[in-house]
Image (cartoon, rainbow, N blue to C red; front, side, top):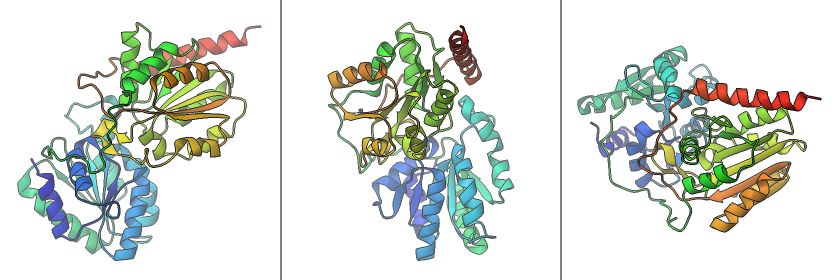
Length: 386
């Protein structure tokens, strides 16, 4: 396996000293190392992968150096527009290195949302004409692959990629330089248990990707509740609020709850402006903010550095509450806001981390969709009766 420090040192030796991107579980040890050994001027955890390409391009324009952008292969889609219309050699011809975690690699067990993405990752890179190498933890080839990436990016003056297989990097023990002390806060699971207990009958929940959906699923089981009112967005990070909005627009009186995270809402924050413009939908947006990308290694987000509530107010949500940390206040507001109408926004500050034995949904995404759609269909039929 590859030592993250060694990988980093070879990059630095080859002149790569600027890093940005969206954290990935397969790259978390490397991400942990660069976060612990860089400052905010040469390492940026970006809102989304496309933004990372733009940041890296700007850095190259100013310095002439080759930057590195890290991401999960599920984020390749977010990069395609700036890769092809900004960095491509037929446009501005910007050299950069993509370090891509290869989730869903064929033959390697993974979650449903990663299977097709993993199967077509090489084809996607070929289709957008980005040359790439694959690394698998073989330390012997590491330096050669990095040298290839740097020399090819320079020679072609365009992006190249390194596709990283599972278990390529060794574990390191260094903690993040911006670790948050949050022992006094509630866990995300505790807050989700309140939501599952107190959400009025008839509410439909769209939960964002990662730990939030997994914990909602388990809380339903713990409380002997069914899963038919929940759409678990297992992939498509950052889009839960817009999925929820699309459902809400189909029947404005339907009670829709979006259960969001700070990393998710940051990724496509422009969506808040769409929600806030409506005055006749029944939309409750709950943001659980732990200041971290918890599902892929706990790397910090900017969730604790900005005010989501001020942003929601500026986007014209009718009722905005938070940020809350007190258990009684959290429970009280969850109950009160669940029983009124309009566009409501609630931010709750929570503790980072999750149970080590946290499970995953037993059913397939297709099954989840089918029971959720059936629930909505039944609601619409009942409302249409004279």
